[in-house]
Image 1 (spheres, protein in one colour):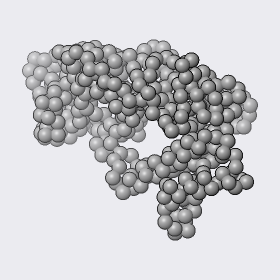
Image 2 (spheres, protein in one colour):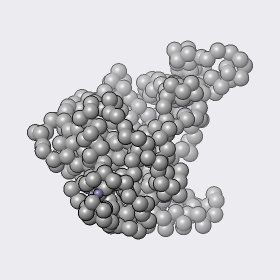
Image 3 (tube, rainbow, N blue to C red):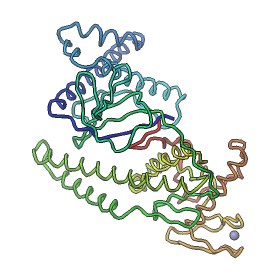
Image 4 (cartoon, rainbow, N blue to C red):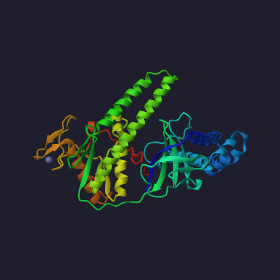
Length: 410
Ligand SMILES: [Zn+2]
């Protein structure tokens, strides 16, 4: 499995200038490529292939007076910028033809110097190197100071240097991870992701988003309101933009750290973990959107998934084809619809249920059934029409839940 490891880097003022130059050159080559392909399309010519684009925009362009300065940065950075463009085009084409599942992918767009995030990538053949003194050597940029918060499990195959909206620099390494299979455990768990609690486990554990996170989110909201009152183009607005970006980065970092701890604990303590496949992409368009995105379930279930693989655990997503809240986890009876404020209920069979724990138990049972039937061969029970309040999932929208900030599964 390939993972991404991110570290903060601290370039010197001189290195910052070199990095800005590299960001700029990568952007120019990317935009040149996009312009050339758009022009070819408008002229009714055929799609310019990757190799030709590289020859015209890097090798030949460097010989022209308008683009000689491309020679001042690593050629790999320029090639990787075109590789990004090629990937963007391929995703767009496969999305158009329906070969790519999920949300529709838009055609590539021009990059701007005002973009919040600037990035360049160095591959193995650019000969970047982690030196013995812990610095990161990048061609034509120099030796960068890195804050190594953890050790890389193996030799990285590439590194991206990123500057975020808050003005911070990061090195993002791609490494092959070594699976560390844990001794098998006994317990299995189902997880219900909800709005009242971040997550409820079938063993009765209820997890709420921590106070400090909610406080940070409130502060961010306040800063955003302050920003909206500032005059466009003013210096004060610029300052406010940076403040918002910083607060945003802080909230994202804190949330990610917290989710990492939680997901690691759950995976360590359980041999199998099942979650409801909520299709967050679908939920995101409803009025629940804000709280859903704040909760960050997609990132969280993505963490569970890759950690399960890494530690030799079972992970399963359970399709939301049954009303997990209303179904009695003891007898299987589907009970009356309940208002959102009903937190506990009794089933005629004598079962007394906490609403969320009952849902988690149903997720666990469905996951286990799914698993023992060898997945895919699993026969679904007859479709149960979703109650209005529950009909917020769109099964046709494939969820992209794999990307996790911090460590990313490729
Ligand atoms: Zn019952």
